[in-house]
Length: 380
Ligand code: PLP
Image (cartoon, rainbow, N blue to C red):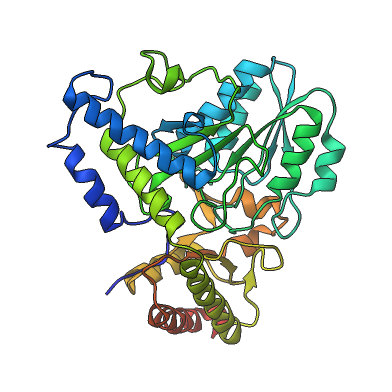
């Protein structure tokens, strides 16, 4: 039996979610923009999902825009805010640990003449508020900081940053893709203008997502066409996907904290067991608040890529702390930003737990990794 420990990459679609989606492929296939009965059924389903998201995020339904996923939500937010509220030459601050969906928007905006700058993080991988304060002036128009990091799981001080942005009239975007379902996500309390979520990280379908857009906030859209999503995201709605996203969001909000408490206990058990076997393991972000399911571990002297592949052959799916850029394995920008030396970053794997994992899975995982590492020459 394989053990899947890569839930930050993606999650399986929950049965209730799939069941809710299926009728919208065939029996209720209508176009939500049509006025006949078939169309009205589809429209009703889309608006029901919008309400499910609004309930989960404690916002108004018309503050929700459906998109094709986290990447599109981040792009719509950053490019939309920049084109609506900033001029080339204005400053945009983006944390050093953002997902490429945000980082690459920053790079593009830089090419367009905006002054895009990085907000550093400390050794635990948390944005340093004091540093951020030093970077602020009247020319800063937009700030983007994620709620929780996909590699380390470290939770960022978004509520404090939201307060700072509010005081200074700065637009604030939060990527909450990895926070949703793991910690309470509250755009109003966090005082952001836009907030991105993704369906496939929360047991919903791939290719679905949403952007919270605070009432009154204008966004130049990424694409042009009809009046769907009130012109903010033209294109015929992915009705089954939207229904699935709505159900997934409702499901995780109704679940209560117990599921995450259980997952956190498993994660803590894993980290303690690994530390017993390998006292020199480095667990990144362990002294900062983290989402309950994520553990980013470096094994000095090991190669993370090799370890990941060996684990795969043994039946365990994890990921590494590196990114494959132009055919070369590069240490992750997150570890680099945290000041982790490349030789340590090389030996990193990420374990991200999910709802189906059991204590037995983790016991077997620890036994396997202990066996694999003891076979490695430097660890014999
Ligand atoms: N933002 C974060 C923090 C992520 O982890 C991911 C996915 O890995 C994304 C954005 C992109 O989301 P999607 O895969 O839905 O495009």
